[in-house]
Image (cartoon, rainbow, N blue to C red; front, side):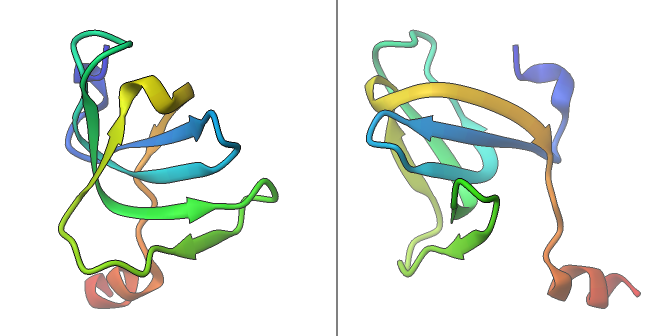
Length: 87
């Protein structure tokens, strides 16, 4: 399912509690009711689409699959800092 999206694949997890988490997908569960999504470069996203940085000191975020209501796939959006470094 996620293979065709390549290394720059991003995912938006719509969580059952009403929060939205966006980031680069590293791992996903084989079973939609068990396991975890492992996300890097993660940030919260408001319902209006505004990003909110996570205030944690971790390389990745694990989200239990059972807490996910819906998934959306998208290209990974580069941060302004990454765009400046490329220029």
